[in-house]
Image (cartoon, rainbow, N blue to C red; front, side):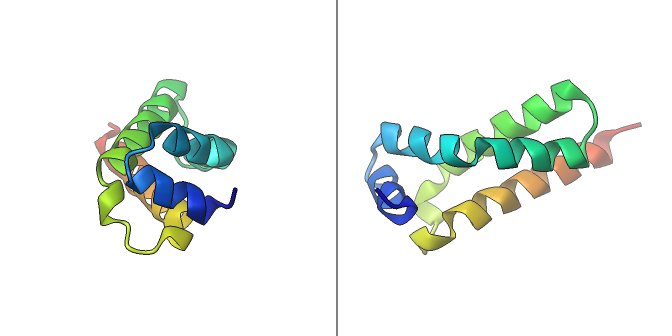
Length: 87
């Protein structure tokens, strides 16, 4: 099944489809977070917050084909926020 089809299912409330989507991109998300924030706990927090935000606001995603880009943008914003909070 394509990512776009999975996004459409997830938008209709299919939690398993959302889980499958996040598993497809979790390694890339981790690597991006690792490059931006150094502490393991900050990486974990950023990833968790990203997934939660994406799940809660999935209905705002207009174009299913941009799911991956959309989630990465959420992650980058979350990592930037965490970097600003560092002493």
